[in-house]
Length: 367
Image (tube, rainbow, N blue to C red; front, side, top):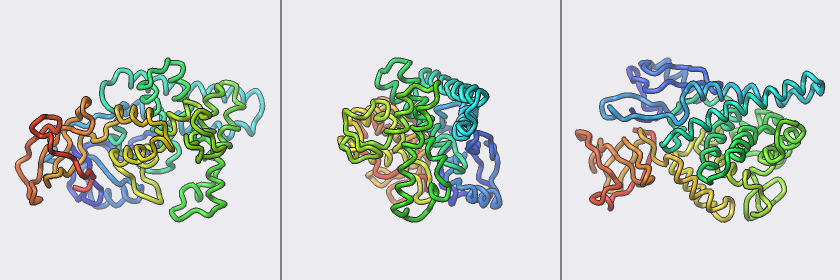
């Protein structure tokens, strides 16, 4: 199985993994043979890459970090929960208060299930493993950020109570965006100064809503307020510096930026994991706490199985296995030689001594 750009799919291509809508329901099931009409429809729904089965990638296993059933449950809980939290405040009565409590408990439950799943897993996080329709990115982004932030909190060795609060804070960190018109959030062109200020206001809008909910701890509300602060003081909304920023927000900011740049947006294509890590590294000591970036690198699959890579000697291959002990040096199945000619596939382990001079210089989903 391997990840490919939808532009390179044709009639008869075998879909290797199901494609999901943002609410977690299946749009197209694994094992479907694509047709021109299906490919056209997927493009209309902003699906850009898919996993396929073919001879050169036979036997390569792509594991999801979160089981599809749990992700579907979590996606529905977040989608329904965020919408409810935005509108419940318009009904400040006993019924509204009780419903708020149920919404918070529902989100807490799915996060605890995610936490249990991550604690049981020994694999690096690979959220590319699930192909998704890009509908309203706020909901899917909130789920992804909570998964990344949870794993990063685990890497920090934090107590379970803190991890659960970080997870809830990550799921709710962008609540304020639901108060902003979608045409501004999804605007493909350059934002005006007024539009940019409006988008920046989502931090305070979310905080103002969350701090009034009795069931939500104040540090969780501060995740919404501070996740765009930078340790050098150039962030927003308050320009806080290193020691002034809550630890939860420092963790969530790393997860937030990584998921944002590795997800498609109307104004730019998605980056691949290794490119997202490069963005984080460039921000160490200015935007992000260096410790958090270094820990994050240890828990995310920089070169996940199924990804096409180019080596520095000119050969092309597909990542077949992830080396958890050497995150930048996976096992690669070579499929083309230095002249870009197809070869009988064979595998090399980049972590082995005999391959120490080989490096991955490019990775994409184009082949």
